[in-house]
Amino acid sequence: MSELARVFPGRRTVLPVFGAIVAVVTFGDHPGPAAAVAVGILLIGCVLAAVHHAEVVAHRVGEPFGSLLLAVAVTVIEVALIITLMVSGKGDTATLARDTAFAAVMITCNGIVGLSLMVGALRRGTAEFNAEGSATALATVATMVTLGLVLPRFTTSHPGAVYSPSQLAFAAIASVALYGLFVFVQTVRHRDYFLPVEAGAGESHAAPPDDRETLGSLGLLLLALVAVVGLAKLESSPIEEAVEAVGAAQSAVGALIALLVLMPEGLAAVRNARRGRVQTSFNLAFGSAMASIGLTIPAIAIASIWLDGPLVLGIDATQMVLLALTVVVGALTVLPGRATVQEGGIHLVLFAAFLFLAINP
Image (cartoon, rainbow, N blue to C red; front, side, top):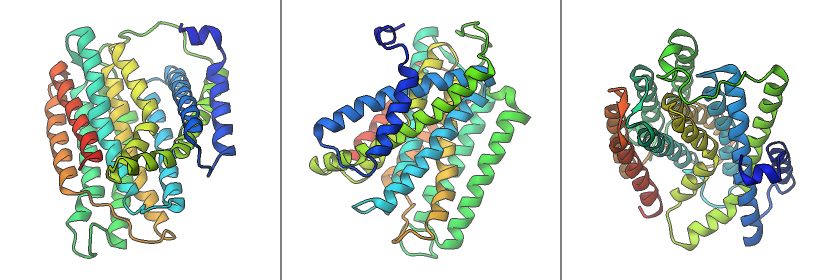
């Protein structure tokens, strides 16, 4: 137990509540430098609390339901954040949904996957996982991101990297259908494809929490995620100002917001990889990427009815190259069912390239 846990044992209960209150009370405010730092510290505390409560719920419901719950919960609130920023944003928000969704894919499929592989391989020599489930997840992510973020650059019904209303509706329906089918395969039809290779590897053998503790953690998890996204929105103004001050591209705003929102999944994935449960880390990573596309595109399609201005979804040439390389490298990583630190390093280099080019295109 950490020193913080000894000094402040109730932090996992207090921080989500306090963070949500701060997020609600300060909604729409513009914090100064000192307040932004304080909000950042509170944000990290809420992320850690969210990871703890997600693990409690996951211990009760088992895999892959625990990973699915965390991915969907975070993404639902992330989509709400995107729409809120698009409605209330001061600058050009036409590409915000695209930049945030693409950033989520790069963060999960390169950052979280790479870090999980490095941690798992460094501890056990090689990181082992189910090739069937991981390949299915990666193929679904690749299809969804191509339909949602690549094809708009090449369609001719509407000028620019924009879908026509009917094309946007088709992409939204296809995304929901693919995600729903994957959830069925993951949780019912082929659930064994998404379970850790080594049953019980690195797990404690403590009894699962009872219904009361599970429901309490579920409520605090949702509260913590609301706090995370609300505080991330509060930090969005300082982020935009910092991006403008250093002369970085506007796409860096979406990347930084996605990094903040996806912190719970990232920490949960690393913890599972440290316990030898790399498949659970992959469930979190690929599941979050799928949920991000599968929920963002339909939500944006509905929101576009009342949103003003164009909705730019097509990614540019540089992002397409990074996406294509990510899919190819990802396929070569997951198909053998095991990986070394080399594969982890490759994904982390791709993640670093994405961050660098988002700031300095």
